Image 1 (cartoon, rainbow, N blue to C red):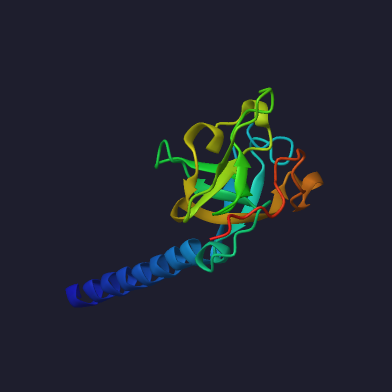
Image 2: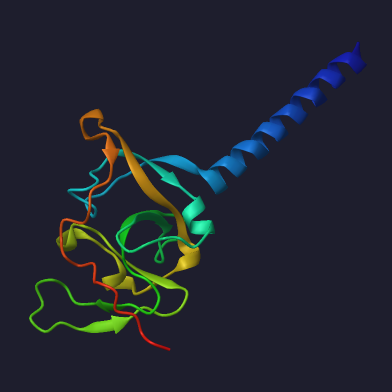
Length: 170
């Protein structure tokens, strides 16, 4: 009897570990459902909007300017941030606030991206903490699923901060 109970417990434990591994791989490499919070991406994404992120773009280095990504915060690695990619490595980006009269520009270093929120007046982003290492990107958001009236693919940036191709020639 003890052998039967022990066998069932080990079988259950084995199944739990297998499903845990499958879930980990799915969330790490395929994607996940994310509930967003904070005003930095308004009006594109509002607090408590539910979105789906996919992680394959990150692994295949196919993040593009204009994509909205989930990344680990450079200031607090326990926190995820949701921002739009404004510049890729080698791009010239405006590092000033929109209200500044004198505009300052900088280049995004190799292995980094420049992230900004769509709500420029209420966003802590690369203008505060600088270029973000590509390795901190967790996934690319591609679909909003809640609220239902806003269901669909995400819209383009409501501001004109995404520069055209202006790479540094090596």
